[in-house]
Image 1 (tube, rainbow, N blue to C red):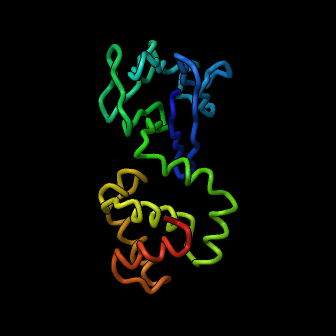
Image 2 (image 1 turned 45 degrees about the horizontal axis):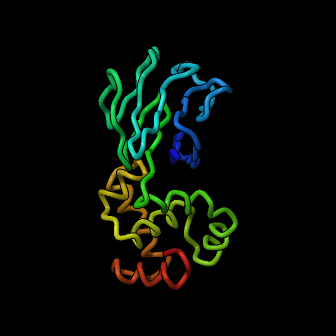
Length: 180
């Protein structure tokens, strides 16, 4: 099974594909269908599963496929956490360590309840989940595609709203409110 997190700006969607191959592109026949964008080919990339190994291939897209910033020439092996760029979209290969992404996406009404109960914004709850998971500011920034300064700004606002001044206090707050 291929598990990806597809990010388009601030929107994130978890995608799971059963099967040995997933086509990524804007065509309705693709297993991972991206919104119509002129920089995305009908079939922009192919992700194959062979045993426990994932590989990605660029079948000749006009704008290329990039993994962790490097253009894919032939095919390339993927690992959990790898970032695949297809036009303006970023697909993150999920590993067990990144299971919190599914939690964030599935939060729905629970996330709204937490926001109402804690006074935190949706993004602040997301940052708090990552803090509770033991991530550093730099790791949180990389995961959320923001700068470290933005993460620190979120943490400052969270501290103002919760009264928690240190990371251990934020962790206790997360546990007490069912965020961790």
